[in-house]
Image (cartoon, rainbow, N blue to C red; front, top):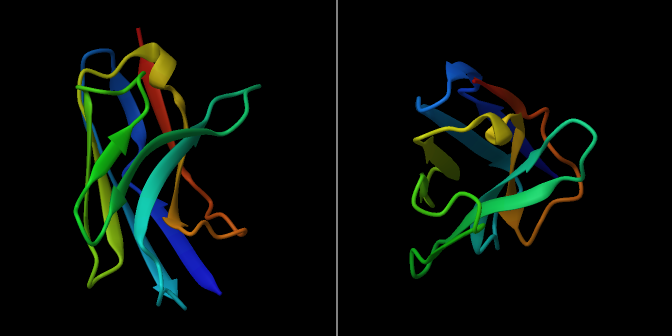
Length: 115
């Protein structure tokens, strides 16, 4: 089992910034990377960004490219998401997960962007 704990969310005005953190603990051996997802009210959970540990390669959803930056520490099983130039449409509960993905998600962290 892997436990995922997200933090760092909050209320911010459009154009502002937030930095999310996530820590994975438990049976993390074999994970090739970590990533972020989000779920807005009434919508399906969607991919936001991921990082691959071995190459430090990062991938982003088109909607956040140029505004969000994912980083992390493989040894500490932690991942971060720096979110700049936030928009109201970024409002969602943000979740992290490992790759391969765990079936059990954490509680997420709420990000609310006001216009």
